[in-house]
Length: 124
Ligand SMILES: [Zn+2]
Image (cartoon, rainbow, N blue to C red):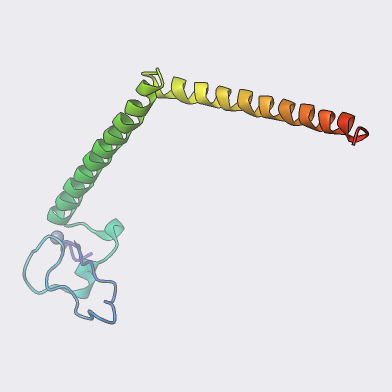
């Protein structure tokens, strides 16, 4: 162990269009770095600055996810309220029940129709 911090160095070898490795490690620390101080795998990063930035990014992403979830929930609830339900799961359960009833009704109608066609067939 050298005791020197290992930084995240987010380079995957580049693409055909962009072969240049990044100039800085993730946290922006300058200076010459030995190869063993660079990794593109978070599991090996020991630099506190890199880890702090990463943690903040993850927290920001989690907050974005929550906001997005709330937005989608509000959109869904706006629909279910027009159906008479404030509770989205109650609305979905009611819709499923209604769908099953309608399917059942449709099947009965088909049976009735087939029966009528059969009964009327000999009249033709
Ligand atoms: Zn770092």
